[in-house]
Amino acid sequence: MTIKELSRHYNEEVTVSGFVDEIRNLKWVQFVVLRDQTGKVQITIEKSEEKNKELVEIIDNLPVESTIKVTGKIMESPKVKLNGMELIPETIEVTSTNHGELPFNYKDITTVNLDTRLDYRYIDLRSEKNVLMFQIQSTMVRYMREYLYENGFTEIHSPKLLGAASESGSEVFEVKYFDRKAYLAQSPQFYKQMALAAGFGKVFEVAPCFRAENSNTSRHATEFTSFDVEFAYINDFNDVMDLEAEMLAYALEKTNELYGDKVKEVFEQEIIVPKTPFPKMRLADIYKELEERYDYKVDDSEKNDLTTEAERLCYKLAMEKFNSEFLFVIDFPAEKRAFYHMRDENGILQGYDLIWRGTEITTGAQREHRYEEIVKNAKEKGLGEDVKFYLDFFKHGCPPHGGFAIGVDRLTMLLLGIPSVKETEFLFRGPNRLAP
Image 1 (cartoon, rainbow, N blue to C red):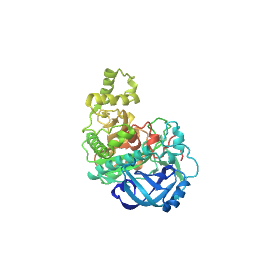
Image 2: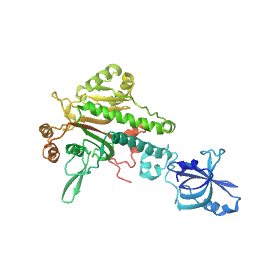
Image 3: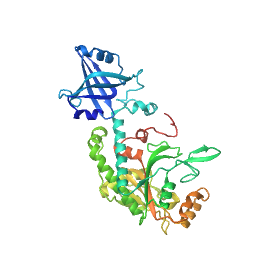
Image 4: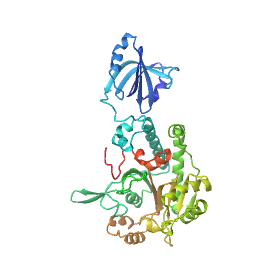
């Protein structure tokens, strides 16, 4: 039984397990705070009672952060500040013992270096805030999945060892694969599209992706969890934007219902449930408005993509102009994007970026599904033979389609106001970190 379930069993015998969070050993009574992933409960042991002699001895010799299994009666007790209940134990079994002092106090990390926390991530993750963070992350992903399931999507699981780079020849991790080279997948993009060529219609995947970027920013990692979506028979990339907006609005609404109050209390953030459709603006128009409103100017050579500062200002612009935290940015030039993105007759990308709270969370697009066109695009990028297996997917017919990907760790960072993805990944991987 979890601690969260105890309030439904007053005056009954229960068994609960967890970490020893705190011990107060007073003259006549011992108070033990037990912690599991759902909460805390106070265990009360009266020293004067003969039947408690063995229990008192166990607690006298028990270090905090050990784990125990307790059987006893759960009592409603308004005088107890911790959830108005207490557990009166009959037996206590020590299931593991904490050997030695913790490397740092995970309950107060104000003076603890982030690298130290990551070195001892298994200790850092014991904090209530971190446990809550991953519960919220899991809930957000759950409802994104739920939205897709309810709309006829099939979840797939594509390989992460590839015979060719999944997007380009750069920024990939090369591994030895028996007598030849292989690469860790940058994304499941090729295989999502293969599924549509096979007639699946609508697919998604939640899985690790690998990028060999020597980047040490607060929002990049060499391994991250990507939520990838692809679906067929679209009219244009507006269908892709609409589905993503509806999926995010659904997941944020459900997450807010379950955790909105906790997010305010613990993270001092508010989950804003957005209205759909999300606003959209052309890239050129954004730079024009940023200059007019905020005197933000960049050289014309930088206007083929959003700078980091332009992304940040997009949050302010979207709130002022549309009262929205979200903004779709469209009409990017094609040369900066992958060869499989569709272009119109003027070379304008049929895709978008989605900016949320001043940071890009998605690149999405209608994909090129016509064999002749995608072969031509690949050759322009110098990728002809490297991606021949992928180009073959389109030889025998493939419906119009599009999709997008969202970094789960970055999404969590923005949702909860966390400074870095180093903290929102279960175990961070970056250029200088390959352990634990």
